[in-house]
Image (cartoon, rainbow over all chains, first blue to last red; front, top):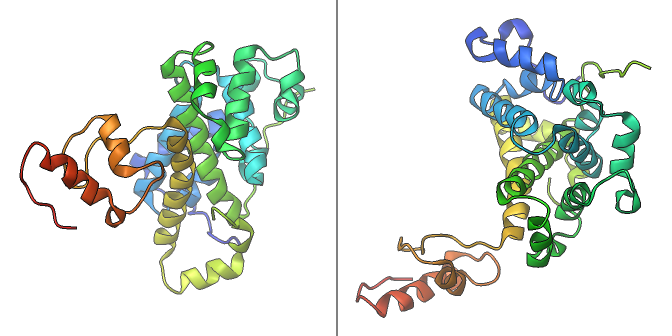
Length: 183
Length: 96
């Protein structure tokens, strides 16, 4: 039995959840299971889903880069739920599983990533492993590659997604269905 | 959750359910996760509170002097340092 059982879909308030469930089915990150679990605290479910969805799909930082970062963070958090999910939008934009693996690996010497992408990946890598290295010098370098709004967007994205991944890890759940990339 | 998430297992949740509703557990978990994520990030940004413990709006330099290099309890000197700064311009007494 699930640690926190999902709220059945037919018990979700339509005016609060219908559009969000549709968005979850469309993007797949998070999937509808996230909403069904969070729906035990309806206000939290709405706010967290909106923040998660918007931080991933809106803004000015490349969605595919954020998708790689999100998966890298999920692996760091040892969260199988978010680590297994894949953004359908990122796939439609051309993000491959091979590039995700590269971003989750030794990206610093990988020529397929630009200097800006490497800085962003390093930002996510260091934030929860060696936060002292994310210092003024690190941000100075970041400002040569990104505008300050983009750095804030990246930082908030990293903090928000990692935080929820840490929580979801403890619930030991898996996605309802993995988005499979066509071969 | 922050230091040893492996210890938050089914047994831990079973115990939690004796004290809190499922709604409260979800609320607590999300709140804690959110704060784990954001506190570390904010820590890298090197900014300080805009207000002193007694509610004065101060610049970042004075705030850094009041709050110190690391986050501290208001009872560990921040209120005293704030009142010392305040006494330079006014005479409001702030008890610590």
